[in-house]
Length: 364
Image 1 (cartoon, rainbow, N blue to C red):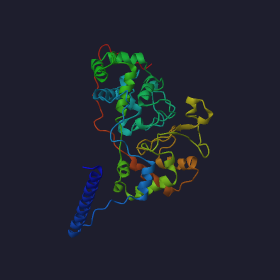
Image 2: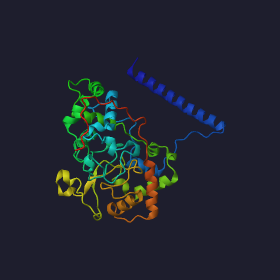
Image 3: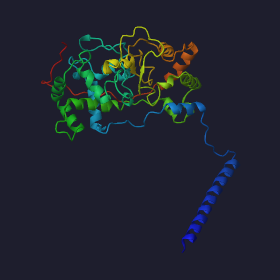
Image 4: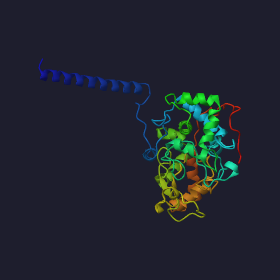
């Protein structure tokens, strides 16, 4: 058979298949019409949703783990226990959950957190929910990721006040923890290390993803938001709020100067400048995520505002250079409340008991 004849037969066959497909569609349409049903059409996407999809993205369906710190079940169980265990603090009073309370939006709802020897910290505790999706950790971005961040507060004198040596000594004195570290890090000759403490806590924190109705909306289900919430979303975007609060986290992806249009009152914290010593970074902070913002009061790095309304007004004044009306503020707040999600359930772990060799609490 010649090549030309083969090609001709292929073309004929393709044409026949195309005709058969077209006839099937026509018959399907006629059948629906005969039954009083109009032919199915692709639903029209509103301009508001299309614009929102350009600026924001739904949360991932599954947690995103680091390649060098995979989310093994044993590690996640260990990380959860460590997150709630006050024995990581020198006084046996504070845990990660003390400042990042998972029952209250991943924060402690205080302007500044209380730490070792009842000292008061200098910055408002940001939420741990969805934090693994941020560009960096802490308000000044000094930690690369949640694994690195988890190691800091344990050793900070104003927070948990412990030392690496004390943490390891306590954990090594508890047989269940020794076993859990071996199961979580089966390929390591020395599984119980301080770095692995941070890695385990960080892996657990990567599970704290909180999808909301806004994520359903972004996936094309326009009825997921009420009309008032859509109106608030429109105002939010029209005013330019989404220029900083964008992406999956609706913030958390970059740094901005607090006070693009004038310096807010009582600005004492120099922000990222304390890390970089670059004068351009004075009053520059990581843009906070707005997810669960309804729950994470008080607001800003210094906890200066206790209501969303006051926070939105300040953002309008100092970041947008605009005096938002009460109506505009109320509309934006209605939208922001649609960003409230829920963390995974069954988070409270049962911790193993101490032993006779476990170092006792030290409040000094």
